[in-house]
Image (tube, rainbow, N blue to C red; front, side, top):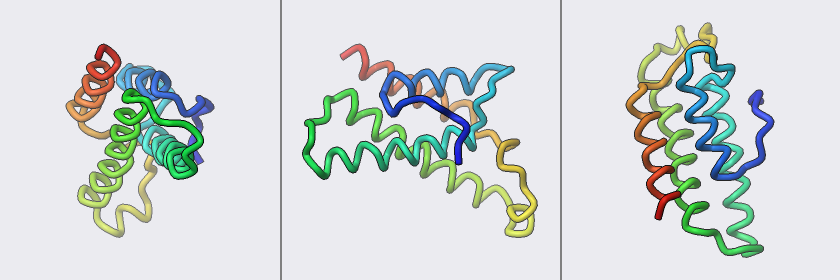
Length: 113
C-alpha cells in the first residue's frame, strides 16, 4: 500500500511527480507507481459507471497515471533478476528522470490547453 494520502485528482498527480524529483522527497517512485495504479482504478470505475464525463485534463492525467504504473512494472522487471527482485527494497528504485520530466510536461501542456 502506498504512503500517499492525496485524493485522485489531476493536480495531485502533477504535485506528486514534481515532488518525486526533489532531493529530500518522501515520495518514492514505488509509492508514486502504486498511487497511480489506484488513480487509474478510481477513474476507470467512474468512467465505466458514467457517473460523470471525464474532462480532457482528467483523461490526460489518466493516461499519464497508466503510463507511470506500466513503465514502473516494466522498468523494475527488466532491470533486476528474479533473485534481485525477491530481495529488493522497491522504495530505493528510481525511474529515469527523463520519464518523470516527460510526464510533467504532458500534464502541464494539457493543463494549459
